[in-house]
View (cartoon, rainbow, N blue to C red):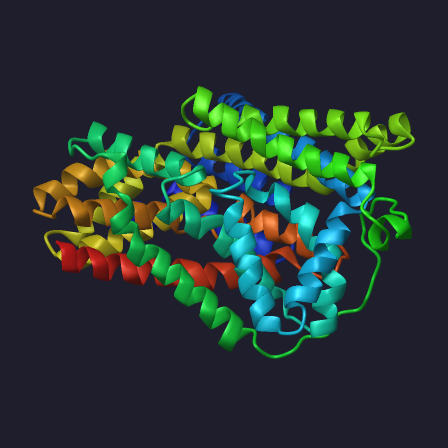
Amino acid sequence: MFADLFINPVTLSVIVMVALCLLKFNIILSVVIAAVFAGLFAGLPLDDLMRTFIAGMAGMNNIALAYILLGALAYALQASGLAAKFANVLDRLFGKTAWLFLLILAVVASFSQNLIPIHIAFVPILVPPLLLMMNKLKIDRRAAACSIAFGLKAPYILLPFGFGLIFHNILATNITDSGLNVLAASIWPYMIPLAGAMLGGLLIAIFISYRKPRTYEDKPLLVAARVDEDDIKGEFKLKHWGALLGACATFGMQVWANATFPGSPLWALSLGAVAALLIMFAFGTLNPRRERLNESIKGGIGLMGFIAFIMLVAAGYAGVLRASGGIDTLVYAALYLAGDNLLLSLIAMQIIGLLITMGIGTSFGTIPLIAAVFVPFMMGMGFSPAAIIVTIAAAGATGDAGMPQSDTALGPTAGLDADGQHDHIWDTCIPTFVHFNFPIKIVGIIAAMILA
């Protein structure tokens, strides 16, 4: 059993992927190599392995399309000057104190999960115009990465709205299907300790770990829209109203889809972005219209295409890990070694959740994989329903922040590296992994022991 825990397709392939990324090897190739390694180690024939990998990628097509179209919207909003105007407002209101700006950035990021559920799409819209102000304040972008990652993650853990509603529904459905009846509406109070752990990690990052000033050069953006200076500093024009209306249309499409179709359908993001671009086209925001529309689509691919493709590859990797059979072996081996010891069992379950989420790159996809085993195991050991909910939520939520192929890590990098001065692994992945995963694990274990 001890060998099954470490000599396992999941464990070994995650180690391979992390090692390659730490060596600054290309992320896409790192994930592909890790997937091939996992499949071959599990004994899958190469043709079956690749078919499984490609089939897994197909399941992420809707998100990839949404990210590219939202990237086009972000590029168009940059070109309109509206994003820069908004950045100037933030600069005037909060641009005097670094820590206050970082906290406001975390709050704005939180809106993307619940109030205006567009997830990481806001990052390439808002963050690049703020980089010059951040340089002036000498803000360590590792702290900014933690602020954005906090906003992308903590709200869906705690609040049952937007992406949080999806997360809580996944928790309730899978726990119920595994033998313990749980209502989604009853979950959020048990999430307070986990959200508090993330808040503690954010405050440590801002006020302790990355408090010291860090100097960056004022460099041009790598993917930058052409913006007239008058559109930034001049009066509010018709094109700005068109851009604002387009942004509202993206939000409106989400509200309509959530009200009409249960489960916050992801295709609403794609339709919302298309509607926004058409509105901006009609208002003359994209002017000359045909050229600027084509330029926006190309710019969207430049801003978000790489992220979209990483998400596709990560989904293929997740499919191979599931097909390898290594996830079940890993779970049963860890629980067997923990035995009847409550504390060791909780620690084992948190490590299992971390490894699985690190492999497949999403906490939403980890919950179904662990709930089927964790729920009957914890019920048999006499844990209370509250302890079971906290344990599964904590085990599923960790690993998402800080993994190279996770959108919680890719999002901050998409904005903070707009001028080529922010490293994805060392400036986003490692800081967010340390400041969020460890606190959630520790608090999740303590909370489960108290609630047991």
